[in-house]
Image (cartoon, rainbow, N blue to C red; front, side, top):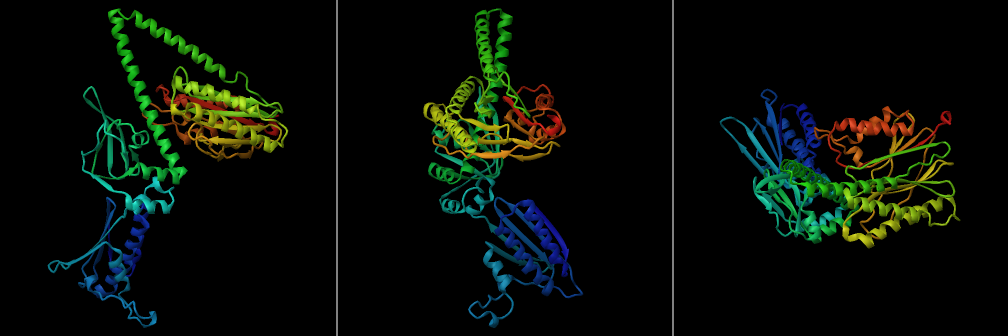
Length: 563
């Protein structure tokens, strides 16, 4: 990145150059150290040029050029005033008291001390003076500048930075090959790399990673060989993290752990989608060949039997969904769930307790298909049994908290203990609604934040995202929150199959479209609103295959005029 400006060498020049510096700070997201040096050069060097470099009769231009590449800031300031080498400026007398020092020289002293390099040259033929100042990022500065590490405590970064080594790749150079042992992961400081594999001898690009992203962490976590080859697309700089450093970073920041977990989940989902696409294509080719040769009768029987079994599984899973949703006086509750495959990993549920409170559950198991469906069935059964096992002889607030913590913790610990080797987890929202007071007490275990919608369609708030999903860490502590649903308001719970629905152009439906849809259709009652939102998603997808399970649950408190 490079940008330059030319200004007339009068007293307005410094103001214009400082405005130019402010724009670079914003556009390039410069670290504070770089911004300080740039402003120091402008305030000291440019001021000296205006003040001493020109007579009033022969003033000319001051040219400022800035370049920011590979963590190095280069500042070039040119003028045609009287020659002056900043190296020749005498150092300030720092040993005397302030009121006894000779005035001048302190600013240039700071420029020389703060810059990594400072070069000056004068061309007698053209009359141009040129000062080149550079500053290079330390490893700590580079890590601090990446969004990935901004949630890591400063003390941890400062401790780890000196232990980290930089790796440089030329365009086309390999970082690691498929099948290599995975003892390190890498954070990209600058540049871009591609993840490639080979199918029947043909190179296939899987993904592209850019500055600020992490690559190779899955092999580091499970000590498995590299699943693909990584190659630089352009000159790139990376920093290697061994297992000890990686563990320190994860342990120091739950937010960083959640970010990496989301990255891994997204990658697994993308891989599963590619596998499903390839399997569908291959099955179509096989089916056509067998139909032409009329030699596939046995295979067709097997496929038909499998389809029948999956259809039975689908019907069983559909029976898990509430057939009739509770409709407390003054409330409307409506829900919808549709799997991307024959069986899915999403579900919603309602649990009516003896005192009239209603439990509302929306969950999304990692992945799709039969494995996810089994974990859905297990989680639903555990939540229902645990919710009804807590005694009622407590105050309303404490009993709600007891039920939620008991149900969610029991489900989490059981899955971690009995099925931890399956590497499955489930995001979950579980709320207990008191229809009489309008109070909802809830726990969110890593699920999409629910939307609280006002009667005019405005999004009042996104509810808390909460803690880690179920099935990751045994003994996880869960926070319990409470909100008051006002008359006319709606609470919208959904899975990421809604916001991540994709059209043929590869665009996502997204949070903004969902919120706009809810605002436009806010006057519709909950059942009609559920139908309208699903229809809007399907219209947006325009026939593109459904990539993920879709689940939607809307809770509406009726206003006085609707009762």
